[in-house]
Length: 206
Image: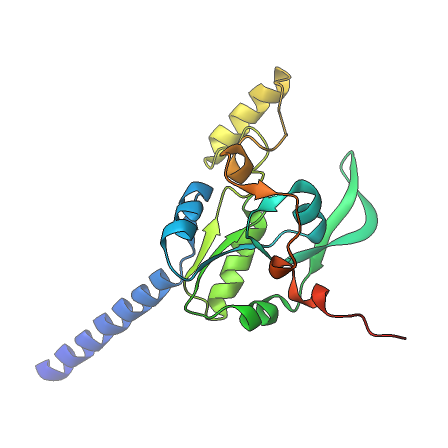
Protein backbone atom coordinates (compact mmCIF):
# COMPACT_ATOMS: atom_id res chain seq x y z
CA UNK A 1 0.00 0.00 0.00
CA UNK A 2 2.76 2.41 1.00
CA UNK A 3 4.64 1.48 -2.15
CA UNK A 4 1.64 2.37 -4.33
CA UNK A 5 1.25 5.71 -2.55
CA UNK A 6 4.95 6.42 -3.02
CA UNK A 7 4.81 5.59 -6.74
CA UNK A 8 1.71 7.73 -7.19
CA UNK A 9 3.42 10.61 -5.38
CA UNK A 10 6.51 10.31 -7.58
CA UNK A 11 4.33 10.26 -10.68
CA UNK A 12 2.50 13.44 -9.64
CA UNK A 13 5.74 15.22 -8.82
CA UNK A 14 7.19 14.15 -12.16
CA UNK A 15 4.18 15.45 -14.08
CA UNK A 16 4.26 18.77 -12.22
CA UNK A 17 7.97 19.17 -12.93
CA UNK A 18 7.48 18.28 -16.60
CA UNK A 19 4.66 20.76 -17.04
CA UNK A 20 6.70 23.46 -15.29
CA UNK A 21 9.70 22.76 -17.47
CA UNK A 22 7.61 22.79 -20.64
CA UNK A 23 5.88 26.01 -19.62
CA UNK A 24 9.19 27.64 -18.84
CA UNK A 25 10.67 26.61 -22.19
CA UNK A 26 7.73 28.16 -24.01
CA UNK A 27 8.25 31.60 -22.44
CA UNK A 28 9.24 34.16 -25.11
CA UNK A 29 12.75 35.51 -24.66
CA UNK A 30 12.80 39.33 -24.65
CA UNK A 31 15.96 41.28 -25.46
CA UNK A 32 16.82 44.91 -26.20
CA UNK A 33 18.00 46.03 -29.63
CA UNK A 34 21.59 46.44 -28.44
CA UNK A 35 21.61 42.80 -27.32
CA UNK A 36 20.15 41.80 -30.69
CA UNK A 37 22.89 43.66 -32.54
CA UNK A 38 25.55 41.97 -30.41
CA UNK A 39 24.05 38.53 -31.15
CA UNK A 40 24.08 39.27 -34.88
CA UNK A 41 27.80 40.03 -34.64
CA UNK A 42 28.84 37.17 -32.34
CA UNK A 43 26.42 34.21 -32.53
CA UNK A 44 26.38 31.95 -35.63
CA UNK A 45 23.07 31.25 -37.42
CA UNK A 46 21.46 34.42 -36.05
CA UNK A 47 19.10 36.46 -38.23
CA UNK A 48 17.09 39.65 -37.76
CA UNK A 49 13.50 39.55 -39.03
CA UNK A 50 11.53 42.77 -39.44
CA UNK A 51 7.79 42.05 -39.10
CA UNK A 52 6.54 45.56 -39.91
CA UNK A 53 4.70 46.48 -43.11
CA UNK A 54 6.35 47.04 -46.46
CA UNK A 55 5.69 50.78 -46.17
CA UNK A 56 7.38 51.03 -42.77
CA UNK A 57 10.35 48.99 -43.95
CA UNK A 58 10.90 51.27 -46.96
CA UNK A 59 9.81 54.72 -45.79
CA UNK A 60 10.73 54.70 -42.07
CA UNK A 61 13.87 52.68 -42.66
CA UNK A 62 15.03 49.32 -41.36
CA UNK A 63 18.06 47.70 -39.72
CA UNK A 64 20.76 46.80 -42.22
CA UNK A 65 20.46 43.14 -43.28
CA UNK A 66 17.03 42.76 -41.67
CA UNK A 67 14.76 40.31 -43.50
CA UNK A 68 11.26 41.64 -44.23
CA UNK A 69 8.44 39.27 -43.27
CA UNK A 70 5.31 41.34 -42.51
CA UNK A 71 3.28 39.86 -39.67
CA UNK A 72 0.32 42.14 -40.38
CA UNK A 73 -0.36 44.09 -43.57
CA UNK A 74 -1.59 47.67 -43.80
CA UNK A 75 -5.16 48.25 -44.90
CA UNK A 76 -6.04 50.70 -47.69
CA UNK A 77 -9.18 51.76 -45.83
CA UNK A 78 -9.18 55.02 -43.89
CA UNK A 79 -10.59 54.71 -40.37
CA UNK A 80 -11.16 56.93 -37.36
CA UNK A 81 -9.97 56.01 -33.86
CA UNK A 82 -10.98 58.58 -31.29
CA UNK A 83 -10.05 61.94 -32.80
CA UNK A 84 -7.43 60.50 -35.15
CA UNK A 85 -7.66 59.27 -38.72
CA UNK A 86 -5.37 56.69 -40.20
CA UNK A 87 -4.91 53.52 -42.21
CA UNK A 88 -5.09 50.44 -40.02
CA UNK A 89 -2.39 47.79 -39.73
CA UNK A 90 -4.88 44.99 -39.25
CA UNK A 91 -4.72 42.41 -42.06
CA UNK A 92 -3.07 39.26 -40.69
CA UNK A 93 -0.48 37.65 -42.95
CA UNK A 94 -1.80 34.08 -43.09
CA UNK A 95 1.36 32.87 -44.84
CA UNK A 96 3.74 34.30 -42.20
CA UNK A 97 4.87 30.99 -40.66
CA UNK A 98 4.92 29.19 -44.00
CA UNK A 99 7.16 31.82 -45.62
CA UNK A 100 9.50 31.97 -42.61
CA UNK A 101 9.84 28.19 -42.78
CA UNK A 102 10.98 28.34 -46.41
CA UNK A 103 13.98 30.50 -45.53
CA UNK A 104 15.00 29.66 -41.97
CA UNK A 105 15.60 26.47 -39.99
CA UNK A 106 13.88 25.82 -36.67
CA UNK A 107 17.33 25.68 -35.05
CA UNK A 108 18.27 29.21 -36.21
CA UNK A 109 18.34 32.13 -33.79
CA UNK A 110 15.56 34.41 -35.02
CA UNK A 111 15.51 37.97 -33.67
CA UNK A 112 12.09 39.51 -34.29
CA UNK A 113 11.73 43.29 -34.46
CA UNK A 114 8.68 45.49 -35.06
CA UNK A 115 7.98 49.20 -34.54
CA UNK A 116 7.61 49.16 -30.76
CA UNK A 117 7.53 45.53 -29.61
CA UNK A 118 3.81 44.84 -29.91
CA UNK A 119 3.73 43.01 -33.23
CA UNK A 120 7.04 41.29 -32.52
CA UNK A 121 5.62 39.81 -29.29
CA UNK A 122 2.70 38.31 -31.23
CA UNK A 123 4.98 37.03 -33.98
CA UNK A 124 7.39 35.42 -31.51
CA UNK A 125 4.55 33.58 -29.77
CA UNK A 126 3.29 32.23 -33.08
CA UNK A 127 6.78 31.20 -34.22
CA UNK A 128 7.46 29.37 -30.96
CA UNK A 129 4.15 27.55 -31.22
CA UNK A 130 5.21 26.48 -34.72
CA UNK A 131 8.46 24.97 -33.40
CA UNK A 132 10.93 27.86 -33.79
CA UNK A 133 12.12 27.66 -30.19
CA UNK A 134 15.22 29.86 -30.52
CA UNK A 135 13.21 32.99 -31.20
CA UNK A 136 13.77 36.35 -29.49
CA UNK A 137 11.52 39.39 -29.16
CA UNK A 138 13.44 42.65 -29.67
CA UNK A 139 11.10 44.36 -27.25
CA UNK A 140 12.00 48.03 -27.76
CA UNK A 141 11.57 47.79 -31.53
CA UNK A 142 12.89 49.90 -34.39
CA UNK A 143 11.27 53.24 -33.50
CA UNK A 144 10.38 52.40 -29.92
CA UNK A 145 7.10 53.02 -28.06
CA UNK A 146 5.52 56.45 -27.76
CA UNK A 147 7.24 58.74 -25.26
CA UNK A 148 7.15 58.51 -22.28
CA UNK A 149 6.99 54.75 -21.76
CA UNK A 150 7.21 52.59 -18.60
CA UNK A 151 6.41 48.89 -18.21
CA UNK A 152 4.92 49.63 -14.80
CA UNK A 153 1.31 50.60 -15.56
CA UNK A 154 1.11 53.09 -12.66
CA UNK A 155 4.28 54.89 -13.75
CA UNK A 156 3.09 54.80 -17.34
CA UNK A 157 -0.19 56.51 -16.47
CA UNK A 158 1.40 59.04 -14.09
CA UNK A 159 4.25 60.21 -16.33
CA UNK A 160 2.14 60.32 -19.46
CA UNK A 161 -0.32 62.57 -17.63
CA UNK A 162 2.55 64.83 -16.55
CA UNK A 163 4.00 64.97 -20.07
CA UNK A 164 0.64 65.78 -21.62
CA UNK A 165 -0.29 68.39 -19.00
CA UNK A 166 3.03 70.18 -19.37
CA UNK A 167 3.05 69.89 -23.16
CA UNK A 168 6.44 68.18 -23.19
CA UNK A 169 8.12 68.21 -26.58
CA UNK A 170 8.16 64.66 -27.88
CA UNK A 171 5.03 63.53 -26.05
CA UNK A 172 3.44 60.65 -27.99
CA UNK A 173 6.33 60.68 -30.46
CA UNK A 174 8.65 57.78 -31.11
CA UNK A 175 12.43 57.47 -31.54
CA UNK A 176 13.14 57.99 -27.84
CA UNK A 177 13.86 54.27 -27.50
CA UNK A 178 14.71 51.45 -29.88
CA UNK A 179 17.07 50.62 -32.73
CA UNK A 180 17.20 54.08 -34.29
CA UNK A 181 17.56 55.88 -30.94
CA UNK A 182 20.51 53.63 -29.99
CA UNK A 183 22.24 54.66 -33.23
CA UNK A 184 22.48 51.12 -34.55
CA UNK A 185 23.01 50.65 -38.33
CA UNK A 186 19.91 51.22 -40.45
CA UNK A 187 19.06 52.25 -43.98
CA UNK A 188 16.28 53.18 -46.42
CA UNK A 189 17.85 51.16 -49.23
CA UNK A 190 16.07 48.02 -50.42
CA UNK A 191 18.19 44.91 -51.04
CA UNK A 192 16.20 42.18 -52.86
CA UNK A 193 18.08 39.56 -50.83
CA UNK A 194 16.21 40.64 -47.69
CA UNK A 195 12.80 41.48 -49.14
CA UNK A 196 9.63 39.46 -48.46
CA UNK A 197 10.07 36.43 -50.79
CA UNK A 198 6.57 36.45 -52.38
CA UNK A 199 7.21 40.03 -53.56
CA UNK A 200 10.04 38.78 -55.76
CA UNK A 201 7.87 36.36 -57.71
CA UNK A 202 6.79 37.65 -61.14
CA UNK A 203 3.13 38.55 -61.27
CA UNK A 204 0.88 36.26 -63.28
CA UNK A 205 -0.30 37.63 -66.61
CA UNK A 206 -4.05 37.94 -66.95
